[in-house]
Length: 380
Image (tube, rainbow, N blue to C red; front, side, top):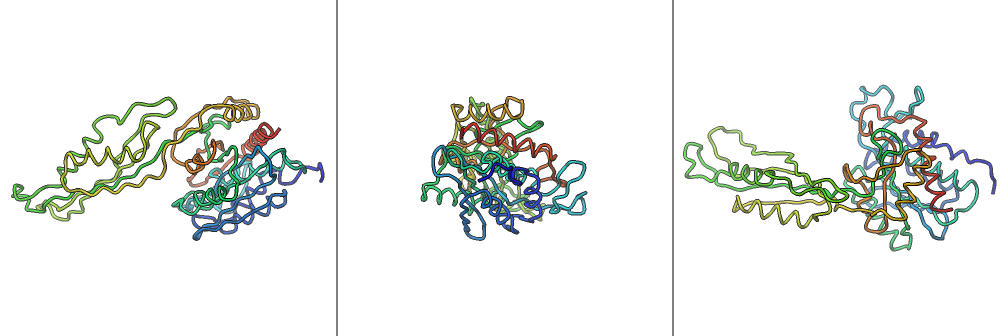
């Protein structure tokens, strides 16, 4: 053992190494090997877990409680129009104090900060408790062979943590602005209403599904689904597609389709909203198909001692008292919430998924300091 600072206590070189792996879902491109080697150097036991064509890993150091887990993903979205980037999307270039690359803020930068914080916290000594990493390569994709499967493995192998922190970008303006303690649920629905095809000049001989679809969508969107709850904003329903596919102007079509997305609060479940959709559509159409996909239920880690510890640690490191929030889209925290308390805190998300995705180097160091403060607070 040595008290010399580990080179891994600087998040920047590891962030650059991760960015240079073109790990567009479902490709790994060596990203998880880069991380595994860094964690092994810190004394972690690393278990690689491949499900389908997805690379995942679980790594842990320590055997006692409290057990704190860092969770995140090494996969990234496609780079888009490469010619529009001012730096190579997979070059990990630093220019004027800013690190460029696909995944810089979502969320390879946070993974590097996790690692740097852990190196600084350990400083060559075993932890007072346990630290683990749950890292998937399937967060930006279908999310079928990633965190869900790793969590099942963790439960089977008695590796479920006492608290989990996900490194998704949560901050809108300044590092320290927001901690996510929950997320709305998400439901996608595809509606197909069946009618009777006929000549537009003889509508009495047909049954126009377009008119029925219009009335059904009007009923679904006529009023807010609900009001906000204590920790969540009001449920939203957005029609995302209306399609008939009718090439003729004088033919009443046989069917008409629409798609919608709902982001729902804790007043509902996916099942209750599915029943509401079906009942509402049935008032306007006798024959219809309704295909529903629920990508996640709403969840909330209620404020209490663990959230208070997290919030105080981040405030100490950043000088900002973070707001507790549940807004935005979904993340893998929705799966983790079924196993243990979970919250999210990461970089400023202004450029995630954009051309020239980037993060200031100073912000990376700031996030690593915040994560170290979290480890110090939970494992002191």
